[in-house]
Image (cartoon, rainbow, N blue to C red; front, side, top):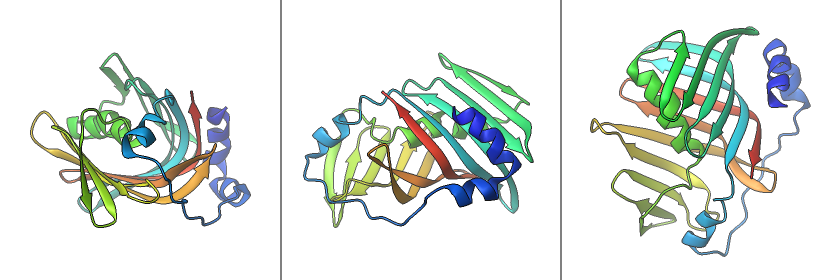
Length: 206
């Protein structure tokens, strides 16, 4: 279980990182239509991951280690640790969010809607496809998603909130996990807030 790995990661992240076989690769070109490619990922129902996390607000930064189990429908369990001690826990079930300690609305949005949209980036309904140089842009009434035309790897996306503000999400460091190419670096921005994720372990449940 990734939760057990998180305890080891929190105690000695240097050892875990050194033991993980990270190597630079480039995603291959994918000869598949956009709709077919996105549909091929619809069998992924939940994602479990361990990561390092940095919260930014203006000139302030807070770092920790995280565990996340998130479903396609947005149900999730999130835990943040610092020096091996649990500092924050959040659950979301049927759009009911609970957290210890309480957090402000911006952080809540980033850690609920932001995490669901960024991890399940391919789950975008009723979109229009536009070609922009080496990227495709997929757009509907609430989202804009850009990904590489050849590799189909996500580059960035914007998500329009009900209050008119936008979540901005950026992706980097592609790596192959369980035969799935996935970004190991994710940045989410909202107003003066930002969250950076560096994924250490990740698994997909079908």
